[in-house]
Structures are given as structure tokens and as C-alpha cells.
Length: 67
Image 1 (spheres, rainbow, N blue to C red):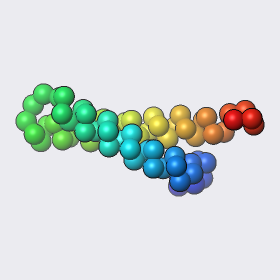
Image 2: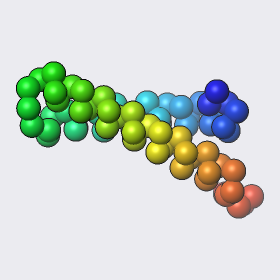
Image 3: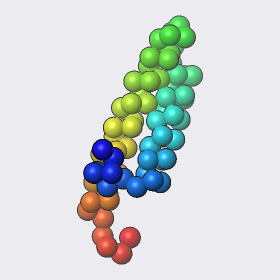
């Protein structure tokens, strides 16, 4: 599915890195029990992943040829 959006191997790697970092940081800084922190971290990681995919797909589609 990510191939159809124009994401190459590096974009997929960066997607995983962004999702993992956002999830970990959010889980550490959020308040609540450990289960609440994990749920918040997973939700934040998923949202950041969706934003990353949309923004990267749009950049790849509409970027100038000289990039």
C-alpha cells in the first residue's frame, strides 16, 4: 500500500522511526498509570504516522523536478 503512495524504502524507515520516537516520548511524558501511558503513546504514534505518510506522499507528488 505504501508503494502506491510513492513511499520508497527510506520513507518507510523514516516512518517507523518517527512513530517509535513520538510514541516513546509521549508515553514517558504523559501522566497516569503505565497502561494509560502506553495507550496514549500508541495513539500518538499512529497519528504521527498518518501525518507523516500524508505529508511525505504530497511532497513526493508535488515537489519540483530539481529536488
